[in-house]
Structures are given as C-alpha cells and as structure tokens.
Length: 565
Image (cartoon, rainbow, N blue to C red; front, side):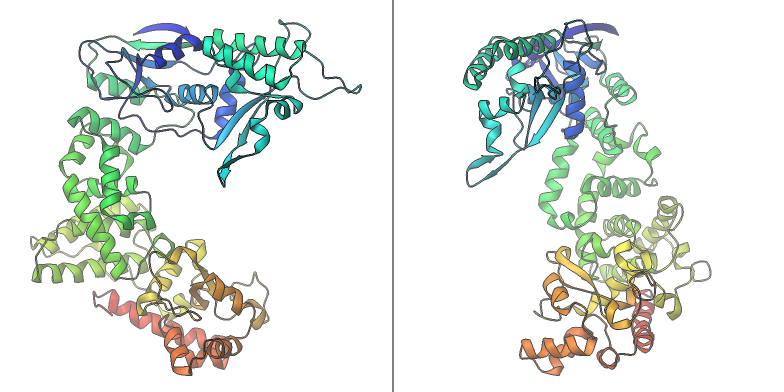
C-alpha cells in the first residue's frame, strides 16, 4: 500500500476528467451542514488542519467494482483510473460546496470577521500569523420559482455582510474567471481582493494524503480494507457493510434491490428503516440471529442475495398482515421484533396455500400479539426472537410440534386488567401502551368528528387524545393517572383541537350536534376504539378505566390465542 498526497486542485482535475469514481456499493451522502463547515474551515485556516487520509484502489484493465460518479460531478464516460474507497463524504463536501452544487444550502466564508471599536474591519497582519476564517452554511429554498434568501445571489449584498461564496475559491481557470466576475459585480476593494486571492491559494494548494491499493488487489481484500479502515466522521452502519459484501459477492447493487422493494411494497414507508428490516428478515431466513455479528460475518452478503426473493415476499405479506391486524404504522407498533418476526414467518407460507395459509395466519397472529403483550422481548430481543422464529417456522411448515417459549404462559404471562390500567401514555413508546392502542383500532378507529377510519396513510397525522382531558379530571398534567393508555384514543388533530379541555359528555354532545348525528352514530364511532360510550359520558374516570380495561383484556386474550376479532 503506497502513501501519496495530491492537492485539491489535482483531485478536482481528476474528478472532472472522470479518472476518479466511487465504487457503486458506496453509500450516498450522509454529512450534515455542520460537518461540511468543519472540513471547509480546516482547509481555509492558516495553519491548515488535516481532514484525514483517503483510501483509493488503482484500476487496471478491468474495473473490480461498478463505478458511479461523485455527487455533482460529470457522469463517468470511460474507465476510471482510481476507485475512492474511503473519503467520499469529505471529497463530496469539497466538490459540491466549491462548485455551488447543493440545492438546499450554500457555503459562505467571512472575509475578515467582526469590526473593531473604531468600526474598521482589520485585515490579518501577516500571512504567517494564525488565521481562522469562519464558514457559514446558509439554508436555501425555492418558492414561486424564486430562490431564497434572495441576498445570497446578489454579490453586493453578500459582500456587505462581510461574506463571499465559497464557490469563488474553486481552483483552476474556470474558478478564477468566476471569482473575478463576482468581485467586480460586488464592487470589492483592493483589500478584499487580496484576502480572496489568499484564500483561493490555500484551497488550491491544500494537500490531501491518500493510501493507494495497487492494481490486482482482489475484491475481497479491497472490501476488507474498506470496512476496517473507514475513517469517515459518519461511521459505517451495518447496512453499508452488507452493501459492499453483496456487491463483492454477486456483482449486484443492494441499494437497487432496496429501491425496488420500496416500489413493490409502499407500506414500508409507514414502518422502520426498510434497510434494517431487510437485514433482519434475511438473517432469520438464513437461520441466523439478526445481530451485528451476523451482518458482519464474511458470507452474509452473499447469503442475503440468495434469499432475497424470500425477503421481499415475506416483507410484502408481513406488512399486509400487520395492516389487517390494525398495526398500521410504527406509531402503534409495540415492538420491532414483531415486525421482522412476522415478515420472516410469512416468507414460509406458500403463495396459494389455502388451508396451510389459514393455519399459518392463526400461528402468526398468536405470535404477533403475544410479542406485543408479554415481556418476552424486553431483554436480548434478537436472540430470543431468533429462537422463537425457529420453532414457529417449523410449526407453520408442519415439521415440528414444539411450541416456542413465546407461547409459554408460565414463563411469559399476559397482563391482568390492573396492569392494563397502569400502562403509560403511548407516545412514550411504551410496549404495553402501544399494544393497547393497536388493539383498540381493530374496530376501525373512526374519528369522533369526521367519521374517517384510521388508515396507514392518515395515522401519522392523528394525535393521542385524552378521552378524559386533564382539566376535566382536576389533576395535574404530570399526574400519572391522567396519561394512561386506557385514557387515550387516536383522533385527527382537528378533532383534538375541537375537544380541547371539555368534559366527555360535553364534547360528545357537541360532536352529535355539529355533525347532525344521532347518539347511535357517535356511540358507534367511540366503540370503534373500544371506548365504552355509557361509562365515558357518566364521567366516572375510575369506572371508565375498569370497564375499558375489561374490553381490552378480553380482546387481548382472544388475539393471543390466534383468534381473529
């Protein structure tokens, strides 16, 4: 491995000519505005600070990986001479900011800093003294075909703020011409021009070291070095590493597969990151626990590619099943384990299994709701989920008769009514609270005012509403008795605002009057949330909790036996 250094100007020339490319498995941009500011300030200050070494792979007659261009750079038309294995985020930040290529932000640098007591802005005394220019990232947006803030595009207004766009520091002839034009339009004086030219010189001459793997380095070695030496300020995630493994093993893009999965299963948008779900389901289908050590193992990428069809089918059927069970989105998902466990199990069910599918549906429903209502997955969730998956999968396929520990009520009992009563507010991501809310939606979850049912598409905009508002109970907002799951229903934000702090009887009568509805319709809408109408309007909070806990408890028992209610 050889260590060398090139200036930013040399790196940019190579990118412009298509000599440097990214291997396709590289993740896309992940840096924040703060990170972009940091790398620019390290380059522009005197003395400069390092931004870290890059890692490249020299390309011979045949590209070891499929290439793609650095974001914002010209498309790759021929065969590049180098693959940038590590340093994509730094190089992309430099390229896009110096070429003013970001749509939603623009980088500026302050020329001299704050004025002194006499109102004059001091120029750094000597080139050898310490000089730390301040970089500012300005957010940009478009409205009615006009890009804002407007002043960013007016050189005079920018310079009046003691700023210049970082893009006029772009090295090379084109950058020099752009700089001269901008300074002329801004009306810059000689002192300002000298300052700009010094900054331009720093950018062009800034050296970035890199380590280079020689021609002939195997794919496997290059990937190992990529994984082990990645020095990005945004560390690699498990998915990033698996992307590289898949690319190296089968020459296919996992990014492309994920995008195709999103298109095929739009419901993924309502749940967790689809990348994480795909890895977990893939691990289970390969007979492995969904853990980091599994994803980092040498053969996981290849194995994932081999079971990918099963992963897609399982996620598609699994999310459809969750919708049928009224777990409409991550907002009411009691546990992440249920998401990948259900998806992996559905991958075992034949497409047109009929009776087999009916049996599987009962088993999976039982597993889903016991996962939601018991504390089986409070600890070592991935390991326990894997153990349960193995036995459940055998039950579905008719290859075994031993129940998983998840079904053992002696080990993992279901909560009693008193436990349901004490369940916390569901916005706190409490497992039991989420299970209660999901169960309460099985009747449709019709809004109290507009009568619309709860759906995956609208549930994100619904709010957790106090059935007995805080003010109506005469208790403090922080009193745990107020914010309980059994005192909650998901309604539209408009309905939540209309109800405000009214007593239950008052807002129910108002809903019936405003919508010209009879009591039967209002009762039906409330009961679609498993809310006992009579107990609610009576106004006895403790009695209401007792009755609703009974309704939820009865439903829970049936669901946890696999019964469809």
